[in-house]
Structure formats: structure tokens, C-alpha cells
Image 1 (tube, rainbow, N blue to C red):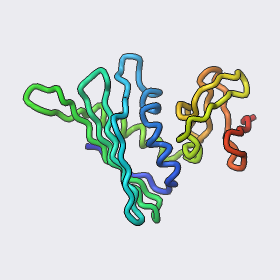
Image 2 (image 1 turned 180 degrees about the horizontal axis):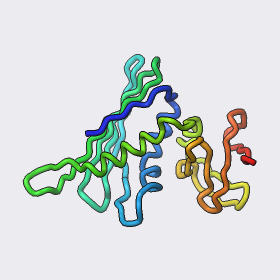
Image 3 (image 1 turned 45 degrees about the vertical axis):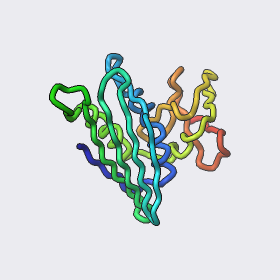
Image 4 (image 1 turned 90 degrees about the horizontal axis):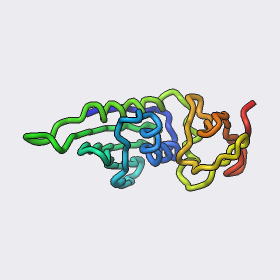
Length: 173
């Protein structure tokens, strides 16, 4: 079991991160490592608490990962509890430490970066690179440590303007 807390995170940014976890996993994995597939996610609300339960699997293996997320709206704090298990072990179930640590490392990467770009990642809008005109969905974007977007085709760094209309982008010079 792995646990991590992130302080000062807005709810829309958290939901954007949770919606793109498989993409973030697949962007960091090696060519021989398994991908991550979302099986289901369930959301619940109670007063100032948002809780999310997600289950993931590696399609090529018998590993299952459950992620419990608790978000306190008044404190803007998210707590993640990760359980990763290998279901195909002789004699029962064993903890899959590698998968749990990988997901923890991905979530820890959000502790010190600007998360505002993740509030835009929940839709199926199309991103168009201003340099090479490559097009892909916003939920598949690569995010740099300072919260900017990197084009997957040409490597151009693009910055979202907080004041721009949805879909408009400013080129970082």
C-alpha cells in the first residue's frame, strides 16, 4: 500500500489528473513495460468531501490497482491510497510493489507543479500545435514541470493563457 497527500489542489485540477492517469502512466513507461487501463471509476460527495474509487489493470498481466482518492474541499487537500495486487500468484494474491510505486511516483510529480492546465484536460477537445499543426486530444497532452504543454510531434512548448477563451493558446516565447 502506498499513500500520498497533495495540499493546495483545486477540485477541477484533481478531476483532470484522475481522468488522465492512464495517459500519464503510458507516457512514463518503457517500451517493454505494461500499459495501464481504467476498469471503472466511481465518484461520491458528502458535504465538503469528494471521494473517488478507481480500478486499473495491466491488460497484459494479472495486476490490479485500486486508487482511493479523498478530497477535502475546504482545505483543498487530496489524499491518495494505492493498492496494487498480482492476482495470478500460486497460493493466492501478492502485493505488486512495482505498480504501486510507479503510480505513487506519478502522483508525487504533481506536488510542486502548476496544476491549472489539468482543468482543461477533461474534455475531448482537439489540441492543434501552432508550429507543426499536429492534432490530438487534450487528454493525451504531455505536461512539463511548470504546467506548460509539450507538442508530441515537434516538441514545441505551448502555454495556456489563464485569460484566454477555452481552446485558445498562447505560444511561449
